[in-house]
Length: 333
Image 1: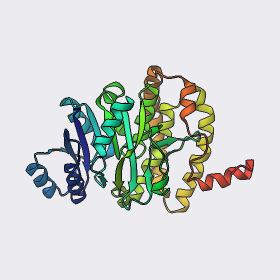
Image 2 (image 1 turned 180 degrees about the horizontal axis):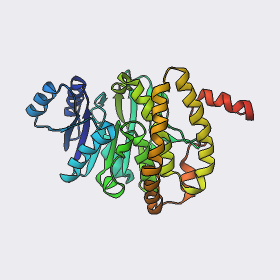
Image 3 (image 1 turned 60 degrees about the vertical axis):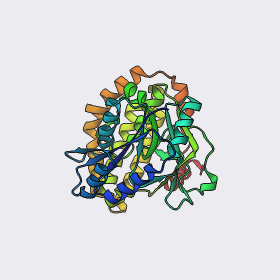
Image 4 (image 1 turned 90 degrees about the vertical axis):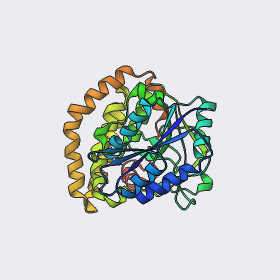
C-alpha cells in the first residue's frame, strides 16, 4: 500500500483545522499521515493539544509564508520521510470518507502523477472545481465553478489541479521543484500545474474523489491581500510558463484582460491593493520570472503544439465583462 502524507495548513483557524483532521481520521484508506503546518498563528493551543494527543506532526513556521511557503514546509517534511504521495488539503475542506482511497486508486489505474477530485461547495449542491484551466487569454479559472453538482465533468485528463485538495506523486516535487514561494497565495497551484505539464507529467481529474469546501474560508477575511496577490501573480504564471510561439497571441489578450480587470478592481474600491500588486510584479518579472522561465522552457519535455492543445480556447465562462467588451469589436459573445 502506498504511503500518503496529507499536508494541512493552518493560519488562525484551529477549530476548522481540527474539524478537517477529524474528517481525515474517518478516511477508508489506511496508510495516511497528517502533517499540520502552522503559519505563525497567534493562537494554537487547542491545535497543539489535539496534534499531541493524536501523535500528529505539528510544524510551525516562524513567519506567515502564505499558502505556497506554508505547504512547502509540509512537503519538505514528507519528502524527507520518503512518502510515496503528498496530498494537499485545505483546512476549510472536508473530504468524503473514501476521498484519498479514490485519489490513490485513480493515480495507480491511470498512471497519473497528479490527481485532483470533485471539489464541491460546502452545501454539496454546486461545484467549486473539477480541475484548473488556463485560457488563451492568459486567465486561469476553476473548471465548472458554480455549476450544479449533478453536471460535474466526468473523470479524465485536466490542465491543472487545485492546491486545496490534490494528490501529488512525490516524484513531482523532486522533478520540478516545490511551489513558487514568490506567489505567497493565489495561482501558485496553476503555476505548478503548468510546470508539470511542460515537464511531461500526467494530470488527471477523478470525479469519484469528492471534497466539500468552504470556498475562500480563510482568505475571504483578507480581500485586499487576495486582490494584491492576484495582480502580482497573474503575469508571473504567463511569463514563466507560456512557450515562445504562444507568447504574442496569449500576451496580447492578457494585456487587454489584465487592464480591464485592473480598472474593475479600482471601481470597486480596490485601488491600493491592485496598484501594489501591479507594482510588485515589475521587479519580479525581471529578477524572478525571467530567470525561472529560462530553466522551465529549457527543460520542457513536450512540444508547443501540445501546450496549445490543452489551453482553454476562449474566455473563462465567468468573464462576462470581457465578453461584452470583445463583442463591441468582434460581435462575438
